[in-house]
Image 1 (tube, helix red, strand yellow):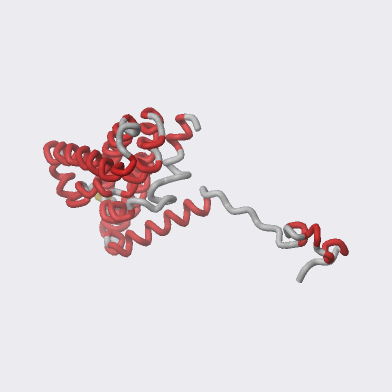
Image 2: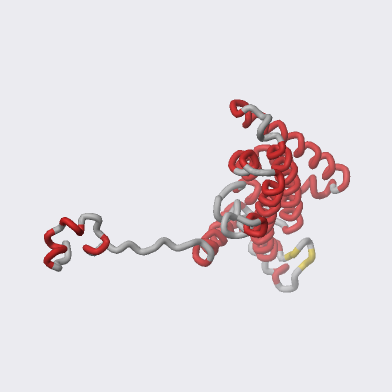
Length: 223
């Protein structure tokens, strides 16, 4: 796998939200506005990039028996730094994300990539993987947030949209609307982007016992 394939797989083919179904809780909670979605996506991507690089660099030093606690400590350190920066320079975003910003520590995407990829691959590969997965996470968040904010609040990044501002579908900003949009996007990805399974041949030609079957020799189809 070259670096372009390594990066692009996280966008659609192995999108952490719409294909691997990871990080569902922050996805549903922070996708009510595009601004919040961008903030959460950027924060998660920074933590994912830093943790993947460090874990990959230390993969031969960290004992296998304590790798998960070590991963969590490293991730928690990066999350703390990101949270402090957000509090200092973007207090409105910090208030918007609330508890979900520190909860990046236990985000399945970050811990999953550390366990499945970073600890088994080189630093450059792990960094590119982190950027791809972070971009895929941000893309999914922004798609959901755009639909929910436009139709649920009648705005886009806080800017009012004529007509829609007076005809809001308030349920789109609530949990049921989030699940509806989430399911809709997963269905679209499954329909157009995932590999479809090949149809099996249920006739005699597809039967593993065809060579010893008398009906196959006579040219008759099994019931």
